[in-house]
Image 1 (cartoon, one colour):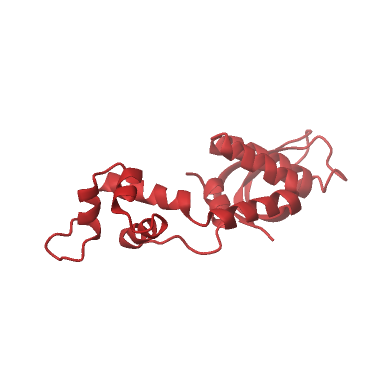
Image 2 (cartoon, rainbow, N blue to C red; image 1 turned 30 degrees about the horizontal axis):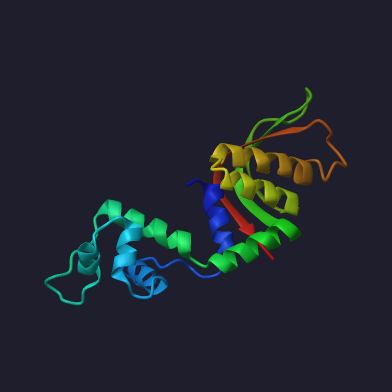
Length: 185
C-alpha cells in the first residue's frame, strides 16, 4: 500500500484501528457475535486454531503466524467503521478535501523556466471531482502511479496554474511522495 492509499484510508477513519493482534481478534469476535467458527471461516483457519488464539488458558494459547497476522489485519481493515467510511467518502465526493503532501515536483514548461524538480510542502483544497476520481481509481484497484497522475493533474490546475488563471500549458511531474494526507470536512 502506497502513501496515497494510506492517506486515503486514514482520512476515512475517525478512530484508530486496533493495533495488537489480540485486540484485532477481539474486534473480529465482537463483529461476529462471539462465534469462533465464523471468524475462523473468515480467516481461513480451523475453529480449533481460532480457539487456541483467543483462549485464556496460559498453556494452551498459541499466537498466530505471520501469514495469519496479515489475514487478521486485512479482515479488521475491511470491517472497521463501514458506515463512517461511507459517510466520509460521500462528504469528500460532494464537498472536496484538503490534500497535504511533501513530494518532488517538476515541470514540463517552455524554455527559460525553472523546471528542475524539487521537494515541496503543499497543502491545497481540491474539489469533489478529484475525490470521486481517486476513489474510483482505488475501487478499480489502480496502483499508486495512477493515483499520482490524478493528484498531479489536480494540483497542477489548482496550485500551480491557480485554477486556470496563469501558467497555461504547464505540466506537472509529481514523484517521490514522502507523505500524503487528506482532510475531509
